[in-house]
Length: 423
Image (cartoon, rainbow, N blue to C red; front, side):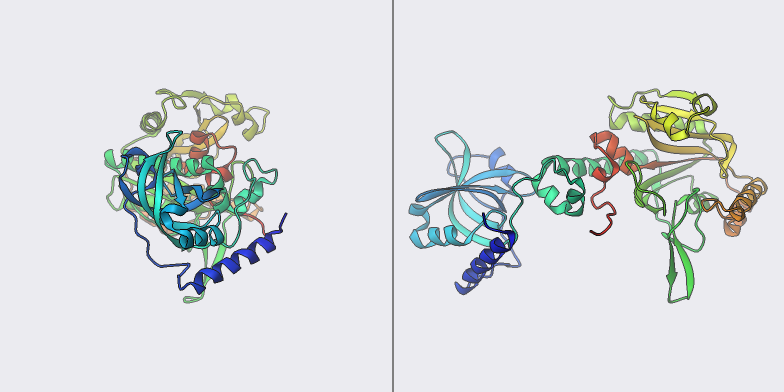
């Protein structure tokens, strides 16, 4: 059994053979008339097509070889025949092409004796010569971290992984569509902030050389989104990355994707009803039309909060969360689904004097050593003094939502490139 290094050296020799023939092994352009899936769906005996993709298998049979070609849409069988290509071209393919190479093939469709839809190759072209071999065994690796470190191989080898991230893209699109349909406008707020706020969390710190000033990566977009309601917008949302310098576990990653939206003239009852409708539209089996509602004090008694929430398997709103510095009238809630904290929401505090008191209390906690306490934001308080209408707002972790909807085992399964400590 050759070593990885020996395989690479062999493929580099093939690369040189391709170059020696005057062929560019990494051309800038490819031609394609159809996808591999279209070759299956639009099959017609004798129909000519040009396909592109990666060679996934090669099975030689003397003067002929079957191969599987895969692009971003599917796979199709292709057939190389010495009598069709000629001795020289067929031998060149046999000697210099490997599983993992990207190629372009031109040919005609036909049905094999086993009635498999196949492309008879009349002409081929190298698009990318792969130097490293694809792993023979990858699915269900004991060292699961290796799949996250080399996500590109995970995507090549595991259709289930690709399915998760295609579903994630669909979830984000549905989220945008639902909010746009309900008159929300999408906005962008700063990721680099002079003062972090909007959540009780420890931030990442950085320094801006141009202005010689310390900055923070945002822990949440909340305080900037509320400024927009002061400015006259009634319904706003943002989908973006947030950063918290905290632990890593099944439900936490230092950088993650958050959806936050705010609606003027709503309270938390409006918010819960709207959230139920939105989630039910995503998946009616997981999210019922009406969620359970329980009191925080009745769920979290002597138990740890996380352990108490883990017992809630059906979608549930946990009401009257304590000690929320940005909340009005104690109307704060969390949405728990399958034991996972998916949502945090509340009727927003719009009284600038009460908000100042809450911030001052947070600063006191900070001075006593609470590194996750929120900061007193004078600019935000000044904005509130100009008047913010009655408002309700919500934060939803989209990585966690994806994890739930795709039945992924952990948050890392629903983030393409989760943070990993170097080996």
